[in-house]
Amino acid sequence: MSDFKHNSEENYIEIIQRLVKCVVVLILIIIALVVLNIYDITSPRKPKPVPKEKVEKDETASESKKIADVWIAPDSSEISKEKNADQISYGRELIANTAHYLGPKGNVLQMSNGMNCQNCHLKAGTVPFGNNYSAVASTYPKFRERSGGMENIYKRVNDCFERSLNGKSLDTTGKEMQAIVAYIKWLGKDVPKGEKPKGAGLTELAFMDNAADPEKGKIVYVEKCITCHMANGEGKLNGSTYQYPPLWGPNSYNKGAGLYRLSRFAGYVKSNMPQNVTYDAPQLSDEEAWNVAAFVNSQARPEKDLSKDWPKIASKPVDHPFGPYADKFTEQQHKYGPFGPIAEAKKKK
Image (cartoon, rainbow, N blue to C red):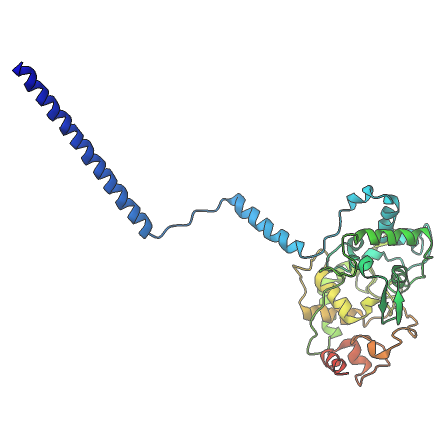
């Protein structure tokens, strides 16, 4: 009996010793974890590398927001869903390949200089800051100072035919005009009435302190433009239509065209030229854009009777190149600048 009691005591002692050892080990583990945690908190942490996929996603989202701020043309593949799809498609075709249908050898009418509408209204009027049609349907009809009266879209389209295409006006009730207007309205279908989205029209460049210089502009033209538009500004023909339009000479826009104003031409080339340049990644400096505009618009081109333009003389733009004017500045300064003093004088009246 005594032996049994002795063995039981030994077993209890052994169990207690094992428990003590376990407790000691647990305490040591806890102490180690506490020390490691303190070190981790006080030590500078290295940022975890961002997964490449997330970086690319964030950059895409940022770029999408940037693009979303500027008008984006509806996808032309959506035209087929419209009730008047054939008419809209024909209008788009007329804008893109005007000369084929309405040029000197047009298979519908012979009424223009061989240029295409999209030579000025890039990619059928869809390019941001590329003279697009985004705000036409939303802002017309409207009063225009140039004519001194209310104008509808038909008048606006015919102005382009008579000035930029140096041709004749289209019958406003005819198939071609109706198709062009249908396409223009379709392009601007998502723009609320009365609004002009960002990216409509052309880039507005700040005025230079000095006059634009045609001679410096010639240097820019030789370096940046001559490959497409050729030495004499005659452009390049591709069959019966211009791949690259003439910038001066008998087949170019006449002196009544919007691009004959330096601010219009400079803003156009700044955001779109040389070919494939975009508004957010321009290649020309502002000065180069102004100077090349001065060079191109100093060259010979077709005349236009402008006697009925700007009936209110004081409303003429600062860079309208033909007098008379309601100010003391010369025709030379109104054509080449500096335009700042003219603009300041106009504000005071």
